[in-house]
Length: 193
Image (cartoon, rainbow, N blue to C red; front, side, top):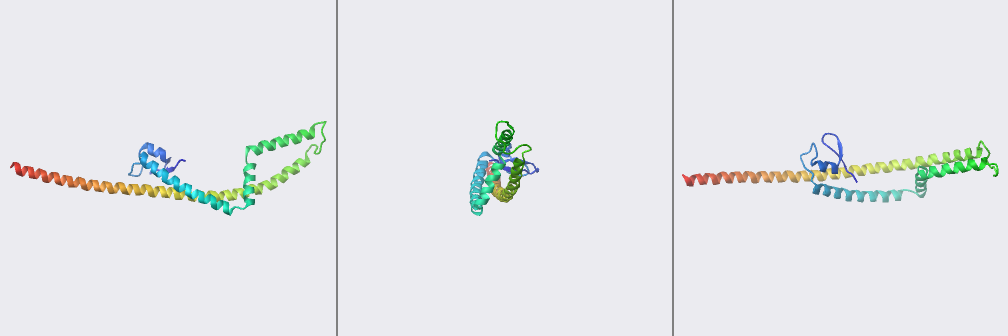
């Protein structure tokens, strides 16, 4: 799964792409491969936990009728349905046009028009119900995405804090070494004089 990261220059990129470049523009930290893997693992675990809970909640709050409507909408929006329905229409028309068959719906196919109208009348509300539920689910998933991005941002901020503390300690050590070097140099000068 790709993580989208908003860079300091306003552009979006995947976390792997950013790690390949070596740095996040607009930030003063480097993301190496180990840190990228650590962040990905944290985010994946977090995402898996939340999505499983959302799926459980969705299944608990969805009635059998709603699940049936979703299944019908999935089938009605698939190539299987288009091919099946196209085949049905061709067979219907061919059967009722051929000379040697019993014609139960002669051209202009009034019964077929009635069936198509009824199908459209029932299929449209079912698809709309499914779309409404999908919109709710999409909203939940966008909240999850926000939470995941927030968690990743917290992790990056935490790493940045660690880096700043390390820089501070290194700076203190550097100053101590300079002071020690000056002290040793002055002691050596005193001995030589």
